[in-house]
Image (cartoon, rainbow, N blue to C red):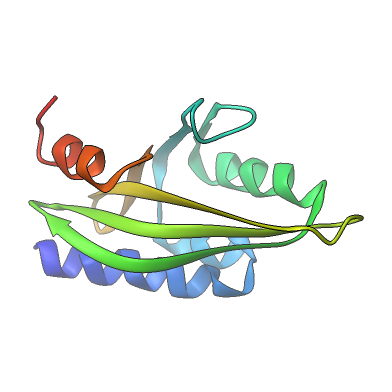
Length: 133
């Protein structure tokens, strides 16, 4: 099961490659939830369902002309998938490019992304995905 979960998450990242969140929708469970933590987000928030994903990306595109998530590695931990990812952006008016590495724990339900939790370190992501505190 873990390998098929890795495949689903990998396909989701590939679909998102061009920056269009609509391409991600076939991989999203209707009860999807993701929270951006305060240590990794200027404006922490919780995003629910397909509309939440759209809102998340809209918040970027207000000030950015390019947003991409580049997955570096997919690590199965039980039935969850830890993704080492780099968020890359470019400012709409400044042209300034930024990078931020994070580690996402993807949980799947019915073959679709159900929950994403974001962490600053790989150790924390793996520990949380394995159920340790």
